[in-house]
Length: 369
Ligand code: 1HN
Image (cartoon, rainbow, N blue to C red; front, side, top):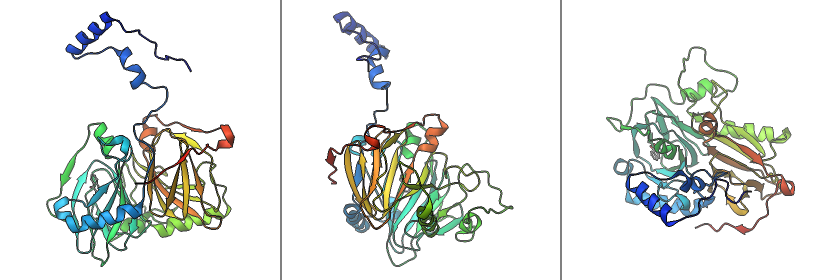
């Protein structure tokens, strides 16, 4: 690699004076910026990081005693990447949050252009309503709240309901395009049968001929864990899967076969007993949640050990490989990413590690807070 790929200007007293004059007229010299602003490969401020669910959960219950959703709007704990304290998000482009709705509570209806998805962690039978349709949520379900759709949550069960929220809010804000609107009441009008979209589209290969759908995201509100799990485990028995992610499936828009939303994609992957994938890197941010089993992910030479419900992030261009810790049980990881946005902008790149048969050297083990 060249020592100064962008050229090099030796500093002088005259140049210093020149820079000061430029600064006083709200200008600067490009050659001072290039090394920072146009690196040869991505240099994310975000760091690879992991949050233990066992540490987050008690804080959610503490928040449960301190605030109610009608005051706070949403009872949400935000996972803050130590490299991104200013924007307080998990990755540059994605928020990863954990939310709890207690029995009898309603999180009031609103809409925003930031797209969101939810991956259910605990509880069963509370609802999210999106544009007139309620869906009942169970652990492992993926529930969508797309761009500008009205949504509220309610818990008519007798147990707490907890899920992870993933949003593209940091990306929307970086593009200076946020809009938000509160609904006039706590709950929107429910104009469709409960879980109508799952009945319409939830059987792969069939869709209603009478439904006109022209929105730029999937019409499916809830991708149920029952179906996801069955498909995943069935394929794991006799399919080779991929070298970098094991048996990896993408949640798709049944209208197009493409990603579920224009900015956020989601995947579920299974690592078979003892499976250890090869390392690769790509220009997407990925947020993972462990769903079944336990294992580790090595990111830039650091080993992150994970177990059920732990959440971890892999920022762009970080080398990573996954391993199932068990010799007998499958391990499953849910993940979401900003790949649809990156691909739409022709910014998506990916490459595998070729050295050492695709395996990184492990230099340290991540110590969770
Ligand atoms: C939001 O609307 C929800 O609807 C959750 O449950 C998390 C984080 C930032 C902005 C809006 C929700 C959110 C959010």
